[in-house]
Image (cartoon, helix red, strand yellow):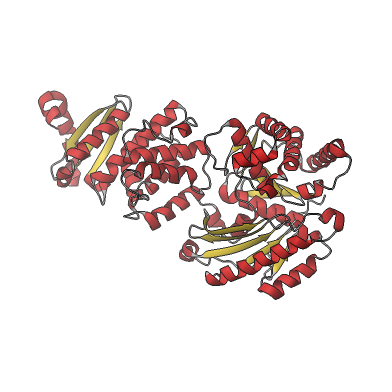
Length: 542
């Protein structure tokens, strides 16, 4: 197993031409990629927020190009016909969308088949598409880049399973280390002799060989590939997990072993009916489950995470300059959503600044969630008022966002729900709340009610109309209002400010300022506060 790392900077290759020339182009470009794998042929068109991919178009055909390859040495004849038909369609779709040239890669089946070169030529003649056949190490690198697109801080081992191969790649500090490829794809495993004992022994020997080369000190394994995603969906079903978003779904080693056993003992048709998995995919899942079971036993990771991003997203990541790669995929996606869907793009930043006094001691991770919520707070305004709260929750929990764990999705969704609704009681989303502890639920409510007040207090610039002062030890929430903004603090604003204070368990106070030169403002604040403390009637009036 060769672990050599090659430099993929060939100007004539598929990665030589940068697709995003400048920030404005990156924000608007549509990029189409085609992945011709051993099992599936897929077209993905990315749109808009380049750092966190938005899927403008996504189509997959389970052609099964690599089925029977281990025995015949050639591409599956029926698979060739289906794959070629899919590629003709993809080329026509690309022309209809006025896309630049599609970037097309082919993996294990085409590179290993005796008629792989013939198929390449047939595709180019019929469609004009040039297939770039990549080796296993390059496939591992691109899959790892896909994981880094969604998980900039990923640390561990990326494991990408296809129909005819399985690749491993180390990721750490935003870099990709050693890479390996193996013949552990389900199509290959179908050809292993010796019955179940022979298959288990073959998988164990191969995985242990991989471990000997790449090491076992990897706390996390990141799973890439359709068979892994199908396994994760079954794990959700077995556990009665309340959310079915696969990206960043996390499993413990014990859960993986239990699910692998459950799959082996279950009727596959029944599992298909429960999860909506295709027959072609479900046929490969038991073999993939045996591989994953052995991976857990051999590598002993603490956590197994599912990535919906893989080689296609890795191709997009390939085009990004380093400064774009360093950006937060969540915040970039939220910025793009605000720009395209909010009533007043740019207000989210002002709202975040206005609410910052509530989060003086917050961790960077919490501030990140606050900023994301502020950017998204108005992106579902077109929904019917009766359903805005739930639409906000749905958007946050189901959207294709990178850099967001499942509990973080629910936190963000719950905060946005409270942006439009005081109470969450009776919500159909309640089962998902179980992914948060009581303190997190309370913090999400506070954030939602803070946005609910701040968003309507001053429509254009709340920071110019007033300032929040939060005294957590004294449990006092103060609103300092400028003289020009006095009229803004009407009945509805007062009610929402009081609701925010109640969610904090705090006493609400309001201070109004007369117009005064800036150099005297601190003295005025002091005088007003003294007056409040000395004269209860004045305090109540203010």
